Length: 266
Length: 236
Image 1 (tube, each protein chain N blue to C red):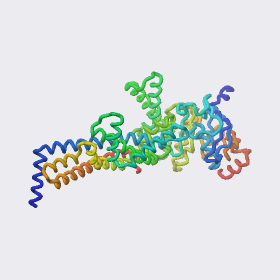
Image 2 (image 1 turned 30 degrees about the vertical axis):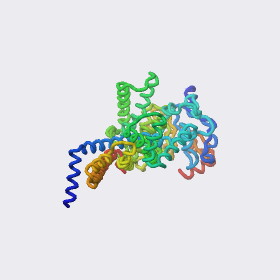
Image 3 (image 1 turned 180 degrees about the horizontal axis):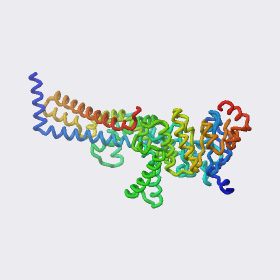
Image 4 (image 1 turned 120 degrees about the horizontal axis):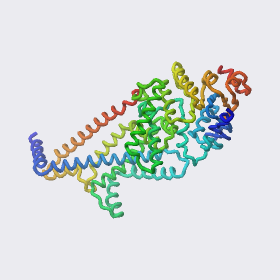
């Protein structure tokens, strides 16, 4: 139990980020352990999304380190594409590939990286047809399994534009699962959804949490934060104002800004 | 109208008996070869330039590439196609000591020229694709180039298909200047018929009709392609 506690997956040190001279993140130190379900809440403009996007370098940090699995992602020399494959990301606006069918959306990255790894390992310029076929078959099997998990097998061959918002987001979540990530970053996954579809997405996320996936969730869903997470972060003015288990966080907050925030949203 | 009938007779005589139809067929073939290959080269060049232009620019290499591409685009948009043909044929080829036929020269010049125009269309097309698409590609670990190739550019091409069709049509019509470098196109063919029948009214009318029919066929093809590609976005 003790070793598991110290099993740090992401270690953030002195993270700073500014846009056009405006400081958005003013120095963040925190770490995330394997199996953590961390919810990040806070007023808009507090830097929640920027913080999340810095974790997989969708935004390049100005200063500081993001140590993921013993590699500093903020170092411009690391192959960020390689490491992003182990960090899933789910967006507010789903961002399913519009020119691909649902199953192609899920298979795209596994097939591409599978072929790429084969070429690298075997020093080949092209992937032979039979190898590609094998990789594709495997990816398809897995994609169908994932679709079955969210009950959308029958939507495998339709284009994303025909899905509802909730279905799109659930497909986006399993698309990130297809790469077997070590952590999934959720950037306000339910904020663009119609209210009646929020439940189905949260249910899938709860299911994931139950399976032991490490998750970092920027959200406005206080109920989800209270119920599912084991840590809640409060961000204000570019720093972490409070980092506590949900029961302490919601019942006995210490940070005055957080008290004010909670009094408004709860 | 007996005068016109006679003109048609004259035209048909040269067209059918003096090998006029062969020249027209050759001209048609060259026109199509030059415009189709020119368009394909143009799409490749234009896409590459557009990709360079939308690349994030905090490193030196993209900046240098960007400057080269800007120079290229301004050069080819700033001079008429005829001038480019003449310079390529009479200046550039002798300088590097290469021999090319008029048709080959025309294919390359048309490709280079339309590449400059298509790059601007393609840039607009790429920018019209939701930035989230590129982000999602990057987030699953694909490189900038791969995300562009597999996700963004296919959607961009769909967006600019109508303008790309216009470019193709413009290319077809502009082939009428390739005789400047000795390529036998439709103009050369009908001019031959005119000269041999001492009569230019009917040949030039026939030439106009061929161009119109070509363009109509292409417009139709583009519309069919658009319909096929639109199946992935019902909402639009």
